[in-house]
Image 1 (cartoon, one colour):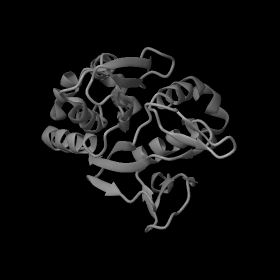
Image 2 (cartoon, helix red, strand yellow; image 1 turned 120 degrees about the vertical axis):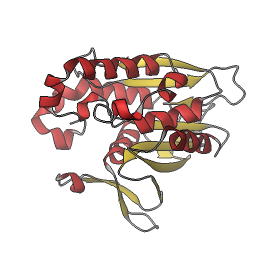
Image 3 (cartoon, one colour; image 1 turned 90 degrees about the vertical axis):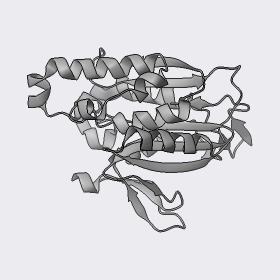
Amino acid sequence: MLIPDVAGEASGEWAELRSACTESIRELGIPVFNIFDKSTTPAVGAADLVVIVGGDSETRSFEPSGEYGSLLANGICWEYGWEGAGEPQPLPLSLTLGYWLMLTSKVKGMIIANVAFEAIAFNASPRECFLLGQELAGRADRVAMLVMGEGSTCMTVTERTRHADRAQRCDAEVTRALAHADSDALARLDPRRLRMTATGRAAWQVLAGAAIGHSFQGRLHTDSTTRNEGYFVASWTRHPDAPRPAPGH
């Protein structure tokens, strides 16, 4: 519903959440080159690598030169992006949305950082998630991560009504961890307890693996107490005195 072409007449109802996503992504430090005035934004502190991480049925990497966003597998006739030189391959739902958000939220111009797409299995163990996060964080000096994870909104309407307290506790726990950039809290998320209430658990623990051992400042752009109940958007930024400062989400 964040995508206006898909939401149709209901698009306006999601403007607040869409704006929060745009605000957070512009804090990633994605370097964009403007061909008209030959300038680069941001001029300093830009990321060398942007990694989009999201949940899927299996853990796998996608070839950046051939990826494109698609909702056909979800029964919606919508595609985004273009086929490059690599083997064309549609991205899963989480990465499709992250890709669309990144390209529509950045300032106008051409991204000049490397971009990677990494799917993590919904049922991946915390150790698998941590190891992937650490590996991703070590790929470049300045790594920005756009992490797509779903909380209790993955539950059916009936389940959310029947288990409202459990859904609220799940969202509140994740919201606190994101707001305070608490990687330890994300690392402690129990896969068994969140299996039916948060499909984003694995993606968040990839973020925890990338962040552990470093100090971040968290900022919440929106959370489950807003009009769009069950959705949260946050930014994590490395403290200036950290050895390799880099924005991360």
